[in-house]
Length: 398
Image 1 (tube, rainbow, N blue to C red):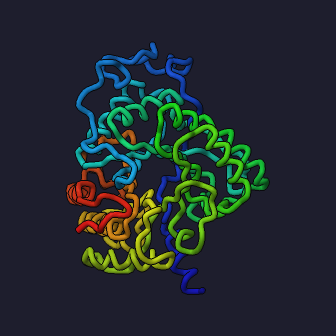
Image 2 (image 1 turned 90 degrees about the vertical axis):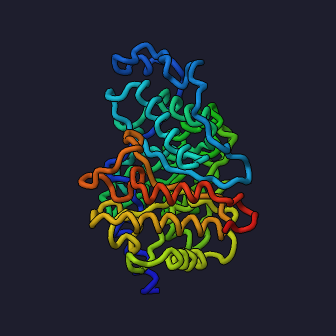
């Protein structure tokens, strides 16, 4: 037990939950052209889509996934993380930015995208959940979602609790303890409902009702919350568990699908071959179950392009010497595991919405987890996304 505690606990100190501390967002209901739309900057003050907008009739152009996702196909995707810049980004900008990301993902061979957005709490024991200054408006979320829907992507909406007020790394979203759980769930339902309405209006495929909320898993409050969500949203209601809780025992959540935020540490040298990394992942997964895992999606996975990253793949904060091969080999190994264990797919963490995915990361300021603009990793992703893997229940791809 002592050894298991050390193994499972160490990555929390190093960072196995890599969303930035300062991230934070939450979105209310979207109605095209309502009052907030007229409050956008001068280049988009009317609320009317421009000629280049994907909302306009002239926008039915070349952006189209090569093989649109259908039930049974693998989900080859990316987590697109969006923090709002209030008053700094016009609606035209955000639509064009969404199109830029869609084009980039199509080039990688992706067929799925998950739009992650943060929301706020006041502290570890707080009962209140709310939007904040970095929250994209309802109108803007719908515009972005529509770009991906029109391009043929499978779409997921995924709220993530911001951690800035939780005093990380000791405090994080996985160890919150609300003073009143009933009040917490009531606040959470009020917050989520507008997002669920948006997801339903745009016919998103999945809504993630919670992410990495270890200490709240199994609470009876989820039953009413999920039931309410399913009345509003007709798609798949999912929960994304953190990797440590996934392997430690049953994830007791009343949802129709379970994803894993998978940052399994593998204690090997930077020169370790892909096969060794695959073995390391399988050792972790075998703690839960051996053989195929056709009901599981890797909802979030990634690693820093740096020396020593295999020991703590989700370490967002450390910046050691850049090592692109470490990241590329990890992506190749994870993809191999997804296929051999016949999982539903993988979503790579992450691309920041305001970034240009076609440019090389500035390693003086960028997270080592950034993969867009790193040629070796992009090659690994494209090889994964364009493989012969047909999806869960099929023969393992070579």
